[in-house]
Image (tube, rainbow, N blue to C red):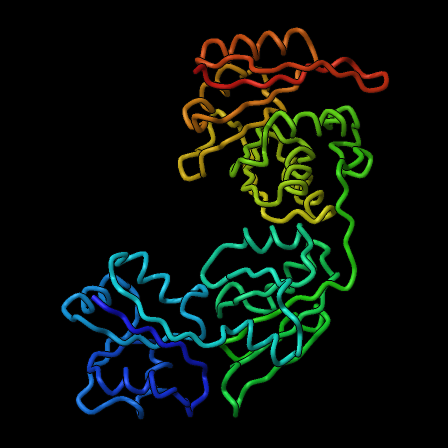
Length: 396
């Protein structure tokens, strides 16, 4: 099967090349969204057939399958988060002949006369915040964002940025790009976008105006503490050693069991912003603590659960590649047993022991759950007790 995929903008008067016009005039079956149909219907041959691209897409591809050739109209560059990608995924053996146009972020950069070779691109069109949060924490100079008209509007994006202290960008919004009669391009301070409605489709480019601090190792005195108790937080050198043992650069999902202030998860998110992080804490006070600390240090995207970990429903949570146990409440064996049931085969568990009793509990728990002690390092900070930082893995 062959697809001709033609990229267009929102201009009501399309100017197609002779090659594309030949494709259009020599075919009978066409497809695209309702907006695309409105734009191109005057160019289509008589007695054409139109297959609307609507969800569920299975129905659309079922209609395609009875034809040898289909001409698809798509927005901009169909390989840029576009419909050509979908064709490749659903029908990998299909032949695709592509006629791309500028994608919407290219159009916005052109209108701004902005070189964009250094722009980092994130799509929030029907997607979660993860990649956007990662881009913010990383601190790219320019971030291009594809929006949607539901949860990820320019207003909601600006709100999230300011909520976590990222006021270090300006925001340029492009509305109805390619529509010569209606397109608008405006640059704002973030605060001026809050609550403002924009015509859809729209997109935006963030440009950094100053670099936000991103320390490697956050002093424990900078965190909001549990009842002001400095002994209840993992000290910075121990925290960094623990992160090293967790081997997070190549991991995707981190669980933090017994997070208390959230210092380990927040440090992990700051240093490895690609991580999905799930945190668990029995004390209700932990909810406010981790939220306030995440806002203070600019680490959105950490998901927290309050309650006894042993009794917490984890069936809908992504399985961990790495686990940090910050507290066990006397249930070390039960916690490790539950973790072993979901830990990915190359995963690691790290625990910081502050006493011989807790060390014995951890060693006993990993031994009874088919794990081995892979590494153990003792570290002493100032006048605090010596801490054993221990890493466990599955037996080979």
